[in-house]
Image (cartoon, rainbow, N blue to C red; front, side, top):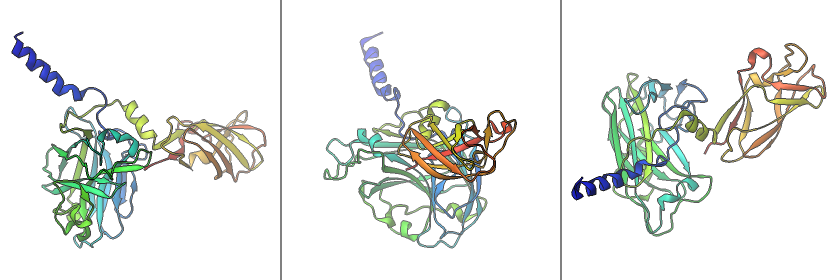
Length: 368
């Protein structure tokens, strides 16, 4: 190998060195994990997490538009076998000023410190993603600083085939007063604007540099996903990384992606041990699979309202309700009351009958 060729090879290695290690700050960018549901209909009136983990839908009841959201087995070759799909089921062509429809993900401040935002030496941020739609639309990709109320947006277009968009957002050096907080709260929001009223679209899109947020400039120039019931929108392969280069999408195993998602939302299966402290109440405690972002809220599924009693074949208790919780980021202790026919001091398993042994029973949520 000649000296010139050797130097060229070294340059190639250095250029591609960003490919090593974990680069993608986005969790579940390939839309692999959907613990809540694979498909939910009738959305559009409320903000929430519905299908693919970590991806929140932000909307409000000012819009009459409705859609079905689903994890769909469709994706660009070599990137992902899945995508997040929105299917418009009710159109809304009379757009009120405050209407919003966004797909978004929020990030903890402690996971963003390598960006150095708001300080000397702040770095650029590159966002890349794959999209397609039922027709040509213009939508907006936005970064929003939740700690300091600063934002920047980029317009992107869709076609009927998969297209990868890559945007490098400039560093926000500011005056040194707007770094991300170093904690477990939400500091940065990555949003895809698909619909918005004049409150968010009547200004001039803020594309050149970070600025204190002006709502009118956040989504100026976008089309409306709710313009027709023929509309579909698909997205996958979402990546946010530090630096000016959009590197190839970072593939993570399903198991790793699931564990990252479980920091915020975890579904526990049947078979958790419990003990009756009276003829009407049961105590049940267990450790979470993954340490949570913060002490979570706990809810019960229908299956978990039943408990199977050891030594009594197919003994199914009546439904109970959660009345007391002791929660940490690592474990929980729960008191469930409202039963009849149980025996104080006896041991039980969550999930009811043996036939329910694969049922999901507890839900722990610690979303941003």
